[in-house]
Length: 297
Image 1 (cartoon, rainbow, N blue to C red):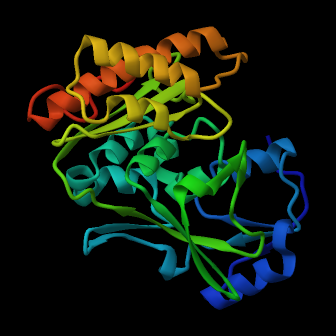
Image 2 (image 1 turned 60 degrees about the vertical axis):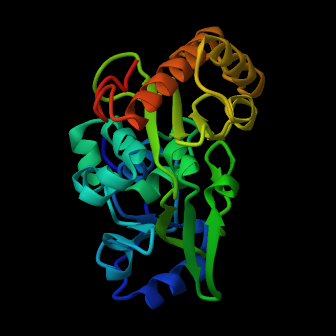
């Protein structure tokens, strides 16, 4: 399908020029990095910008680095870059595991983490892991920069806290101080390229504290505080699992659509939570499946 929409194409020579374009056009400007969502939306008429700003040559947006216990993921970093990063795999394994489940190899080669969260679909695979690691989204505009906690980033389906004149420059994650194990569990209709019908991510710490996050089980992805409150301080066992699953059901709000019913999503959310917790506890003690194995239901 060809792109029939008309728009200006700008390839800024530096960040200052890019920010001037966003300041001038605001919501009528769209950034082009990976393009895996934008190009589809242009073809289908879902996006009608007046200007497309190609940011792929801006060095400030590139790279993945780990310094001082913080991982910086530049806005141009692709999911393949995440998968190939030794720092991500070793220090932030739940994000690494989630990256493996995103779409297909071809899409992962182009799609960026920043683009994934800017699209802000409820099923964004990266979002639960970012919530667990208490990520911040770094933005810049002509008036300065902001650091937005990922807990405040998603404001609704396909809506974020980014201002129209701002550009996302990076996503930063904080390395947990305590020993932990984790897991991302994704519900898909088949192996390969598919959006999540539901996703559950967990971190289990050595002091029996827990973090739980979900995607595709409500209007926005994010932490599951009620389930965490039930789990915190306890050792995982059948009774605690049942209480946590009940708490999870009380805080998710899945929908029925062409891909799945809300009843099926609710049931499988409990299954995924149990499997993810069991895998995370096993990994905490150096056992269980390797990261990336068995993460798709």
